[in-house]
Amino acid sequence: MSEIILKVEDLRKRYGDNEAVKGISFEVKKGEIFGILGPNGAGKTTTLEMIETLREIDGGTATIDGVDVAQNPYAIRGMIGVQPQTPGFQDKTTLTELIRMFAAAYGEKVNPKEFLDEVNLGDKADSYVENLSGGQKQRFSIVAALVHNPKVFFLDEPTTGLDPQARRNLWKLIEEVRDRGISVILTTHYMDEAEVLCDRIAIMDQGKIIALDTPKNLIKDLLKRGFKKEQHVEQANLEDVFIDMTGKELHT
Amino acid sequence: MTLQQKLFTVWTFFVINMRRLFRDRLALFFTFLFPLIFLFVFGSLSHSNSTSLNVALINESHSPVSKQIVTQLNKDKIIKVDKSITSYADANQRMSRGEIDATIELPASFGDVKDGTPAGQAVVRYTGNNEQAAQALTSLLQAKFQAINSTLVVTHKPFTVTSKETNEHSLSAFDYTFTGLLGFSILGAGIFGPMNVFPELKKMGILRRLHTTPLRVWQYFLSTMMGNAVTGLLSVAVMFAVAVSVFHLKVVGNLLELAIFLAFGIIVILGIGLALGGWAKNERQVAPLGNIIVFPMMFLTGVFFPRFLMPQWLQGITNYMPLTPVIDGARMILTEGKGLLDLGSQLLVMAVWCVIIYAIAFRVFRWE
Image 1 (tube, each protein chain N blue to C red):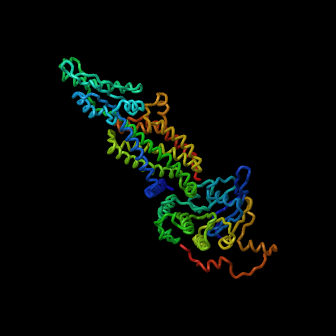
Image 2: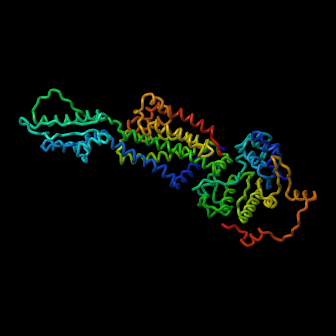
Image 3: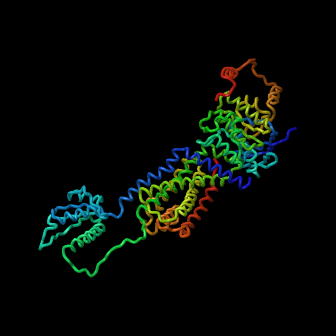
């Protein structure tokens, strides 16, 4: 059994009369990619924001590596990395400077070049973020969130709006982060993404977790209940065509 | 995190944001050139309406004495003769518009020789609004004529009066204009700066992202304060150079004390901007509130009009506005040669505001 890094117990959030998160519990292990799926308004983002210390927790507890989120928000912020839905960085600032600023926010001094090389942005070290492509921006945003070597890494819909190459590239990058022993928690609307990327997923609806398992087991369970889909045996789909014709490498 | 690490954070943010400012042409324009434009406009205005009397001179006489007086008046520093005016009609019109203060008329008979000596009477014409100017002009002319009289008729003068300029430098209109414009530049950079920048940073999610780091609000404020103090002082230094070289500003006080005093003033006023920008979710929400705070300060604290022109009760109230002691103190150091130790009451008012403003700014700050 691998060790538990995030433990959420009976977590609740209420906005006026509306209970957005209705007492959810789950655990995330060290070095796994954990996906939270669900329709808009299911409470995914609220759940993440409570664990990220951005929103007050109304009930229940969340602990990261044994540290209580509600009681030690500043200690927690030093242990987590957060990649928001739309990565925003100040303009007219070079990537090197931004890495330096983020490290400084954690009280650390780093060598920005190392981090930029890690995500193939070494030659962009002196460019401004506003001159990066969407995929480059996402990769930069990820590395900026990891400058302090966090234990848990949160991503909110990381691949929304990216082209297929950039998307696959980002999946690879997220897997590399996981392989460094960092637990990754992400939300997504794409089922293919969850299936390929996530070790385990939780499906949320109306503030509750309605299913929690590996993608494989969830599919198996559904089939066991007698679910049948119209059978089309196709050796390839349109995305395979697209990737085959335009290349798997990143277009930069 | 140790305090040293926290201050390292502040320093890094300060350095990188300063570099960023110098890459931003629009920001440079508003920080450095915008106040200079105001300095040139208001500087030239206050220069032209110094203590001179603008008059028309209409000479109908052809006598040598009249010519002598005309050349004398044309050279005079206090009485400024507008040579473009040659007719009574023109002169009257200009007087009624307030463009000139009075008209001096030398009648045709002026300087005609009577009983062996030339004689005549000049007339000063004025409109009801310019009685004071006319009286001043009359006595100036009388003094001039006295000098001419004494060359013609030898008289014994037991009582005389003479005027001497003291060494004490008194305040000119420009001294008030300049310190007022310093206040204007501090007000603009300190309030409109963060008021526009913070909502923008929130809209782009930049502050939200910083919020996920252990960065504290005070660290963020402190780095902003340092940046504002440095750019503010640089902007003041540029205005200063122009004021001294172009408008002959006389500097009496100690510049280091002035810099320290202004840095404190900048930080107090910046607090208002931090409170407004830190509170606002978007630009539209903060603009009206910003104007309610900025405009009274612009017109009541001596930015554009010296406060001594206000009625006593209004001066009493405006004494306690946050920008007033900054402008008054700057003027007292700059032109009266006062030191920081003489500015106890100004510093006290500023310190009280500093505490109130920052208490509010920290309380209302929102990261998104």
